Image (tube, rainbow, N blue to C red; front, top):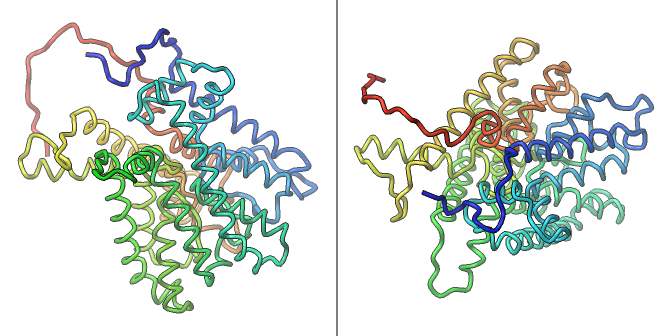
Length: 458
């Protein structure tokens, strides 16, 4: 039976693996960013920057992660910072969206591989309305980023006392927040704004909107002015999980850190900062508080949130909110003895359930493998290494940091450790399913049917 997302227009899919197209696309952008950051005019240091550090910075920007091995404020020149901003924007929109948009606008046609991969990614749109959807994505993205920059400008002006610098910082942080990148032009990230509630609230909103996902946002827009609203199940799940993953972590963080990292703030600023820190682990990477002094219980909470991540079709990473929801509801469903998973009066097919468990399981295996390797080659606290690994895979950018330094823990890793973190960021950004598809041949039909058997498990 043909999938409704199959391409059935007047062309044939090429044999090239679409997943390989996406990986190569990201690779080209990352390599280009690396070469540009290696230029003498990109860095302030006369000694320049090493290839692995340039590669790490470029990957972190393109994969909208935010882990840094060099202090962005003091190490890079305005040219270097501009390159990082462009890489963040490309990474936030995604190579796939950018390439598809250019194919439609310039070539007036779609590459079959790109179109196939786009439909696989968004799974809500026919090939006929991809052009309209992508146009709306670009308009929406630049509009929200522009509004965010305008709202941040007065606060930046108060801190910087320079109109030109305030404009630059406002645009950079608005783009970084919406793209869930976590890069900051402040040496100590956003900690300088912890007593500025308006800036924290604007940043939180940008992160939430960017992480909510273009699929869900498009559905909300379609239903906004309708008398009878019919939201897709995907939108309902994404919204429900967003609310849950904001509310519960906010409460937990406030009570865990009220006498810790929050203790020097007023009660209102405690609430605002707790809200931002509940938002940012879901792939944004900004911090207004010192991560290194937080309790282990708080860091474990962050690890869980970083693993779950944002919603599909958005600018964030992680296994995705909808994946986590399907896994949890499937387990509850099995415990109740039900054969079918029904969510909001809709039946969830077996392929979706299998895909969710597959993503969940393979992600855990991938993280565990990388964690064990880093434990072997790097001499740092084990829990902090785990935090760094999950942050890289979830494309978050939060880090316990290097002692007496404003760079991430990765800044103290060997070239091998940094390379492994680079791989984690790339896999986290392109998605574990896309990565696995590079090595698995699909649709090999079985010619022999064997007798059924049972294996005792559990």
